[in-house]
Image (cartoon, rainbow, N blue to C red):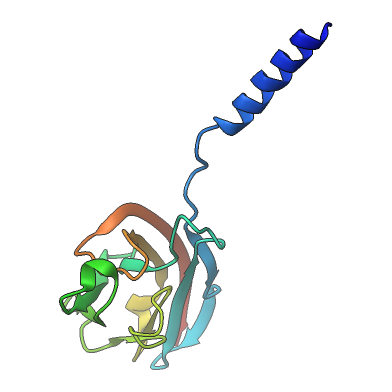
Length: 169
């Protein structure tokens, strides 16, 4: 191989490496409650924590977090909201809105850090556990569009996991 061919080959290889497509986005569960057995009448603390793996092109915040009792499909949805004139820039006052099916309403509350601290943790306290709560519980979270989560909607990236809850008499 002459010098010109060698230079051309190195050029092609380096160009191919530089032109490789962008890697897929990172959004995953970094921690969650393990499967547990509880006593009737006690409380269950269920949580998930999301991460972006340190990506500079992504964020670890969620826009919506939904908990579903798979045995009957009853759900609690949590929406992360921003109020203020600079929400589109991720600056504002953040809050969470919890909406549960009637069968769960009054028994479920959010737990986790303040909405203005961080939003990569979604936990619920399920009080007064009964036999109906023995089920696989599914948690689905949708990633925010922007770091800071000030936009109205998520970005469409949804991840899901399950946790088994068993209630003994």
